[in-house]
Image (cartoon, rainbow, N blue to C red; front, side, top):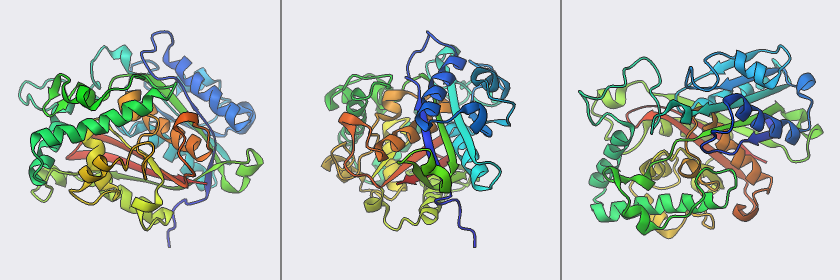
Length: 397
């Protein structure tokens, strides 16, 4: 019977650049910033110890180019295999999956996962177009990322009988919580707390989503060094073990048929179920200590709580109102500030999420440290509600 990679691979080092408008550096320098922290953290010699690299970079032609060569040159990796991967907004998690699966398969003992994006260099105010579709919405004026997630919000409000004022307040609490957490994080792009009232009264981008309901655009990089679990403690006393990595990609049926009601994300639901089975998690609401989820918009985080089985269907508002997902709540979500505070450099985001789970499990997050976490989860989503790719990863000590 297939058992997955549970406890076969450990993370022994991680690094994360400062995220933001990094006009001061190029993509290669961002890569090195994350890489240097990771190798120092793992206490390894990169020229001798790293045997393979998986490199996440989603936007071709921006910052570093569209091949694996710039990564090898920037990090001076010694003629090892380097594979550039792209899986839309889940690119960073895809790099980690590649490195972890390589080690689990026995192809090498130590591998590097690294991701970077220099989105500020594109000049766009939002995510740039990925793929071959034209960036022209004249025929479909609502076919923008905020517009599509706004549909998710209004459909959710309608199905569960939430009036617009209460719905806006619910989403504002999600954003305000994350911005507070980000204010405690020196690596975050946006480090200023915002109140619920400020979120509610901010300019509208696509109703009901206002300025503070949407994540920003940033530059950044993050890295992980993984190795065979049985040798991990020869490098450090507190490695973090991978319990599951699962990816789900749309079949297209959500938006092509009428079964999907537009209030959740199918790929998250499927990836989560498989990840819990692989990790042996029976009760996610009570067993998962904390999570970093893909809060590209406040409504995304809200419905993801239900997709991940942290909240019952239609009941997330009650958990948000009770403070369950706050830093001092029963199940903290976005302890590092999430996409709301970091922005979304596509190739780096999934690894940035894992960086926070890794540090939290080691007890190294200072003023935002969660008490005695046992399992951490990352959720990295690409696309839009009815046509997406999702990665769900679980780690523990």
